[in-house]
Length: 586
Image 1 (cartoon, rainbow, N blue to C red):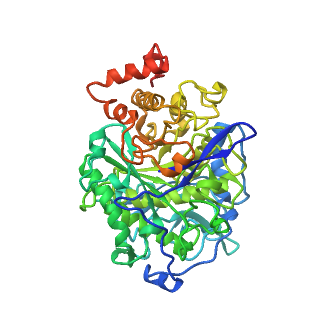
Image 2: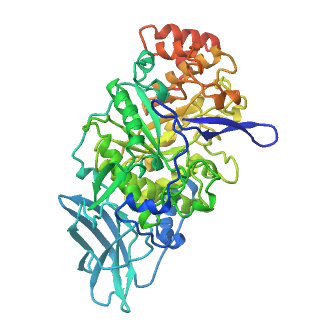
C-alpha cells in the first residue's frame, strides 16, 4: 500500500521504511484541494473547537492500571493507595436495550459527605468528573447504575467513558478508573457473514479493479486490501449527507464514488475486503489531526487521529460510523470485513507522527482512536474486525522515534484492558530483515530472526513466534480465544531474480496456511510501483507495463489443483528437503 525507500540503518546495514503513494480505483488522485477555512462549517453542523486538555493528567489513572497489566511482561509491580478513596472498581459498562448499565463493587468503602456514588460520563480527553452526573447510587459494597444511552442524539454515550466519584469536602473526587462501553455490537442491525473464502490476499491496483479488467479474478485473490484517507471523504463537494447524533454531516461524493467502486467490485468478485483508515494532512482540515501531532505537519505521511478535541472527535465518530454503515454489505456499496486503524503505529515518527515521548501516553492516545473506531464500526457491523497495526521490528527499536512492535502491542492492550476490554485484532506486517532480502528462508543474520517471542524481527520465516506470543493468556480476547491475526502487508522484490520472488511468495503463503492462527496474508502488490522500482524494489506480480512476472503464475497457482508442483519448484529453488518441517506449523 505504500512505496518503499531505502534509508540508512546503522553504519553498515540497511532497512526500509515506506513513503505513502496513494492508490485509488480507476484513476490517480492528486493532492487534495486545499479548502478555505470558512468552508469548513459546511462540513459539520457542530464546528466548535475546545481547548486541549492536559494529556498527562487524563491518562494517569489508565497508565497506573495499564502498568499493572504490563507487569505480566516486564516484571515490575505497582502499589497504589489513597486515603479515604476506598477500593472501588467498575466491573462492567454495557448496553442493555436503550440503556447503559454500569456495575461497580467496593472491597473498601470510600469516605463520602452524603453516602452517594455519582456516575459521570466523560469524553476520551477529559481528566476528571465534570458537568452533571448521569446516575447516582447509595455508597455500598456494590451498586448498579442504569441510564439512557441516548443513541443517535447529541447526548449519545456510545463513545463516553464512565467514572464513579463521591463528594468529599464538597468536591467530587474520583474513586474509580474510567470504563468504556464494551458491547457496541448490541446496536448493530447488520451482521453479514464474513467472506472467509481463504487466506490469499493482495494489495489491489486501483486501475485494475473492474471496468473490464479481471486480473484479480484470474489471480484468484481471496482477500483484497486498500487504503482510505479520512481527509478524502470528509467535506469536499458536500454532496453526500449523513444524519448522525442529531446533526447532518457532509462528505465528498467524488472521492466516495471511487472507494465505492473498489469495495463494491471486489465484493462482487468474492473477495473479503480490508480498508486501512489513515489520517494524512490536508490543508484546512487540521482539526482531524491530534493536537499532539500538529507540530509535525509536513514531517510525516500520517498522523494520530484526533480524540482530544470536540471537533476532531465528533468528525472521527461521524466519518467512521458513516463508512462502516456504507460498507456493511447491505447498502449496495460492497462489504468491508476488516478495518485497520492507522499504519505501523509503533513507527511513530514515520507513520503516526505524534510529539509525545512517553510510550504509555502515546499508547493511550492510539487506544482512544481504536476505541472510537471500534465502537463506530461494531455498532454498524457485528462481524467486522477492527485491527491495530504494527511492523516487523518486534523487539528491535529502529531508532529513537520508534517503539518496538511488541512493546506497542503490550501498551495498547494494557490501556484497552484497563478501560474495558474489547475484541481488537492484530494487523502485522512481517517484512524481511533487511527488507531488500527476498530469500528470507535463509536470513542474512540468523540472530535477528529467531523462533522465539524475544526475536528482534518477525518475518514469514519465524511467523510462528508471533502467533506463539499472541497465544499467551494476557493477550487473549474477551472470550478467551486467540485474537485474529491478519498479515495485511508483506512483499518480496524481484530484484534478486524472479525465481526468488516467486518462491518467496509460495513459501510465505504456505507458512500462513499451516498456521491456524493466521487469518490472511496480503501480498504487496499487484503491480510494480515506479517509486519502488527506483529503489530496486519491484515487488509487484506484474510490471508497470502490465507484463507478468514469474510471481504472477506462482501466486495464481499456489492454491489450485496444481499447487504441489509449485511447492515442489519453490522447495527445489530454496534447497528445502523437508517442506513440512520448514513450515513450523501451528
